[in-house]
Length: 68
Image (cartoon, rainbow, N blue to C red; front, side, top):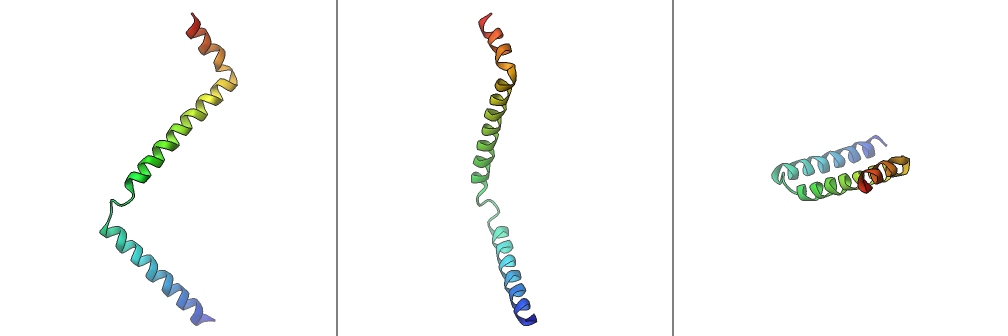
């Protein structure tokens, strides 16, 4: 049983070291996807915030500004 656990740990260690080496060779890979994901999440956060503010009664205040 211990040899199986050691083999699994060794295999995981090798896989992790390989991924780290690959990330060091190509540090910029995937950065655009992360930027897009952050932008989409920020936009969704703004929309949810606006919806929550309108549902909490701010809609009357904003309509007062627009209609005056």
